[in-house]
Amino acid sequence: MLNNTKHEIKHCPKCGKSFECKPGNITQCQCFAVQLNNAEMMFIKEIYDDCLCADCIIKMKQLYKEKQILNYYSSIKRDNQ
Image (cartoon, rainbow, N blue to C red; front, side, top):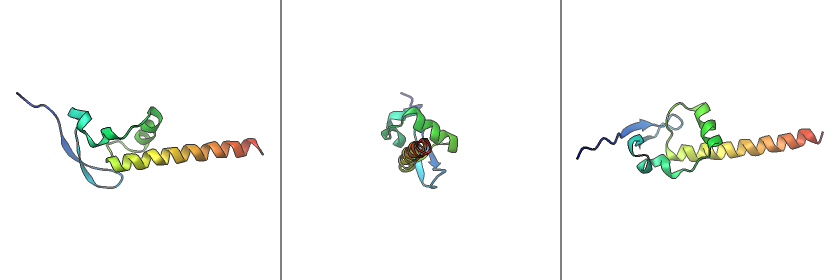
């Protein structure tokens, strides 16, 4: 039986850490454990062209959430002026 699963060692463009990317077997890839909604995914794709390590995906998810909170409170502040 042939195994056509593609695995490659990548370096995270955010932190430089190396990790094994498994696009041929996505459920076994380190990034699969991090749940992202479409908006979070688009936010990351706007900044990075390649895969991030799971730790950096989590950090970017948190950054997106913080950005959304700041935008929300900024809009409330503007509306109340």
